[in-house]
Image (cartoon, rainbow, N blue to C red; front, side, top):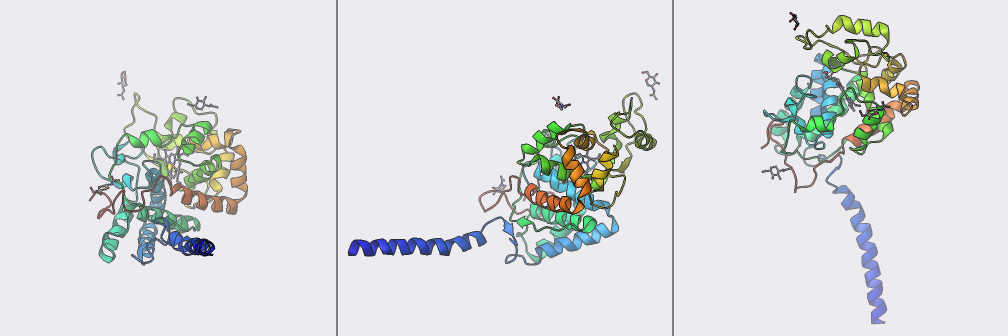
Length: 327
Ligand code: HEM
Ligand SMILES: *[C@@H]1O[C@H](CO)[C@@H](O)[C@H](O)[C@H]1NC(C)=O
Ligand SMILES: *[C@@H]1O[C@H](CO)[C@@H](O)[C@H](O)[C@H]1NC(C)=O
Ligand SMILES: *[C@@H]1O[C@H](CO)[C@@H](O)[C@H](O)[C@H]1NC(C)=O
């Protein structure tokens, strides 16, 4: 009698604890959509406001922000390490120096957020929100961004070269690089569609023009690129102009990038290889044909990229007061 009562009490308590804790635990997850809905309700709106304002004046900054988020997440996880200043910081590395842009959007949003909700919204989250808002502005692509990232304290000049893929990689090397970050082959090809907007400096692709033109590059397109990029003088270049990454619709984030690859108009080896390699060709053809499917996959892959090695909770990282400096 007493024993079975005890058993029933235990079973009841067990069932109760399951049903009671399941929902709040999920609500209290330190990394979730709407993380700031109580602590700083206007957070996402404020970021969106500055993205709109700056991108209206300079549409290229949308590309800059999306690339910043990529370079943040692939190096020490999405912890805003790419935003830190310092003589030996990530900013000073070859993949980043002189080509990253959009910092002023992050700084403007952070300045207002520190007035409205001091010490609450991380720079890593601001960057993730801003990348989402940029994709919306220049591509009509929308997705929800889980937040609750915290900012790291470490930014090392060597890390970008060790983690970011260079533009001369082939398809298998790209696959392996993305796999190390937990991203699939399809996600690698799909995220490369970000090269549907933005610009590149000549130094990122001039080995495809000089001394001889890469046979996988459309000859007319190569001739055009040569008019923009001067040949190196005694192995060094003094000027470093820029050109659009996507020659078909350079200002719209869309699937025309993949159509360009079919025309041998991929600017980097790492772009053209996606069409030329049997490993990824079918994915390129699909993305070229089905724009809506690509956009949906792109949104999902951006969310997944935004989860790489995030710092959450309270034990690790901090909420920076200024995005270019640790507290
Ligand atoms: C697949 C491997 C990738 C390689 C090898 C690569 C390489 C590069 C290079 C060399 C540039 C030009 C830098 C310059 O010379 O100014 C560039 C630009 C850019 N990349 Fe990538 N990238 C890759 C993937 C990605 C991903 C995953 C994203 C974002 C989801 C991205 C977004 C961008 C954007 C938007 C630009 C233009 C930036 C601007 O206009 O300021 N890239 N990329
Ligand atoms: C791709 O690049 C890797 C590393 O540079 C190389 O070992 C491999 O042979 C290349 N694969 C192809 C198909 O060219
Ligand atoms: C390039 O190097 C060669 C031999 O080293 C030299 O004669 C020539 O003047 C150099 N050209 C320029 C433009 O510096
Ligand atoms: C960064 O520094 C702060 C303050 O010193 C510390 O509380 C935090 O744990 C550090 N974060 C990381 C990721 O090391």
